[in-house]
Length: 467
Length: 139
Image (cartoon, rainbow over all chains, first blue to last red; front, side):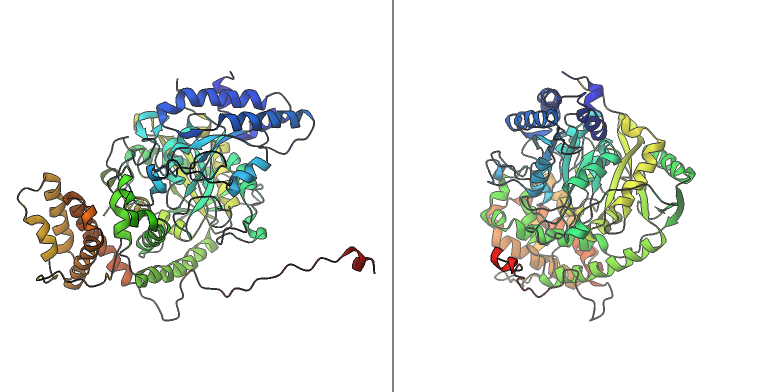
């Protein structure tokens, strides 16, 4: 089996070695599978392993590369996909007991794109039930149990892409695919010391993905570097004719982030978090200094507009979720969900009026313009990914995560791209992250900002000790 | 109200529920909510939830309180037989706590011309250009 040092390498580096035939995709796949079987259950990281498919894809990749048919930087690279992405021949359980036997006879668009790029699917990542669509109060809101943080297993990875973060963080795969409706890529990446990218809404096709919020769901990579996010997004982006929210190909296809010409204008958010815990604030302020000293960046302070943005965002998710899971709610099978809030959330969401929903959508349009104006002054916004480190595995999240998150609501209701990258450690050896947010379609700028930061720091190269 | 991950964990932001009158009960003020508190045999959790519910309701106007009452009644009418007392108390608390945010959102100043973000667009199927047959192409 390959050593940990190799299994924690970036996708970029693994790809170089595979291309040069210094690294065998089969050996790499077998090593990740072995590690996933050993460590995966301790973290509740996977919903399902797909070893037959993985080895078949790995052997095919090895054969093609040996024959000189190199498909690109993901050829022969093993990954995991959140269990809300359909994979033909395997269960797609959406993290929820009522759907644990569900099989969908088609691959999701993202799975097809990764397969075409030669990537190797190791398994389906565990997740919060229905991506939190009925609400949840505990990390155990998952058919496969609470996902444990690789840095300290007494703590959670955050949801809803909880398994994706556990897998990428523990070096069980080279990268993972997650999704975000509100917080589900940025929070797990922040809590788990990973680089996770939430793309602009509509960039990544969602056919074959479970729908929670038709106008807010996004699919993105959770990796161990900003460069890896860039690489994976290039592959998975593009128009999806079966997804009504998909952008036209010319906008959807992500060209990748080049080098910064001149200086990147970074706006430091001064009114995002009401309070940041001291063990988080130290690393975040140190990260701010790194940005300030960078010759490629000009840093200024920026304030978010005041308004009922979070309520509007929550209302949109609530209504869309209630209609997406209407049958489940009406059947009463929400009672089979693990979480006490999940069992009742759908009933409450159904009470939201059409008038309030449209009101939220009108406010949403105004906010889109306000945010776009901010991005006339700066290229990206920056702030702590979260004001706290990971919550305890058994914490009541109503108590542990009580803070307001305006940029989370704003970024998601406006469909703006964001990336979270690690910037240090807080108490209990838990990671701290910094996030960058950009104007719609400026995904490259969040990658550029994160890349500048990662060229001057090595937090993203650190990995947990696991056995 | 827990705000972070609101869209993930706590969705109920209801409003303007259909009016529902329970026989012999005026659903104004704290009447319906008070019914939950009436039982002396309630578990401690329910009592704690009720205390929070009362605190949240006290912040609301009479019309907002009535709206919460109506929404709660609507949920119980449709799904009450599936819910235990603790779940009912939880629903009351959440609906009461979220009403304040909803009222603030409704107070946001909008003009008649402010359109919603997901505007309707007319649809027309665009047929693909007819492929030339080889013989036509040769002409």
